[in-house]
Length: 259
Image (cartoon, rainbow, N blue to C red; front, side, top):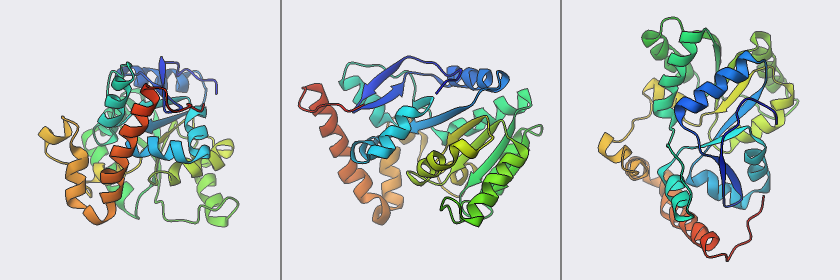
């Protein structure tokens, strides 16, 4: 893709991950919007890395995105094991507030798409309470038939295109949001589309974050595991060691990295 989002990158398990800071990413998004270009902004954590190793379409989506930023200490540490440096972990629970302040100051428009009914609205209300000039041009929950060509999916695409937002933030969760975007990107009129996972749950307050001493030292996964052990045990207790093993195999050259 061609956009104003051009940053140094590394290859981690066959995925292009960009070495970008939050400030650089915001600057690139602004250039993309002002130059009337289009871009997909994706993020990567350990779960996403494992999915990319197992699902060719998911790896292809990431590698065809304009920027893929680091959203997890595991990815940052994995890159370090391979001799690379990722300057910053950018996590939506914090970054959505920065992104909203940035958009409000420049008059950029946002469309929120995802989460349960009412959650994205609550997230928007909290953001507008802090940034009164924030321009929200659309909000749509994520509980609709996402099948390409279905009437509900077409209505959502039409709603986005009717307002042509500068930024469309999608929060369906991974990998549903990536699949939906891959299928609908050619038909969307948004300038910059960002895949945000549980962003609306965090910003609305529906989903709690761990204590700062955990989140700042790469242990937020442990807090989430304690809160939702039945749903997340496999993701963390199996997924984290699996990712580490894959990185170690790349380091010693036992695995052929696919692009």
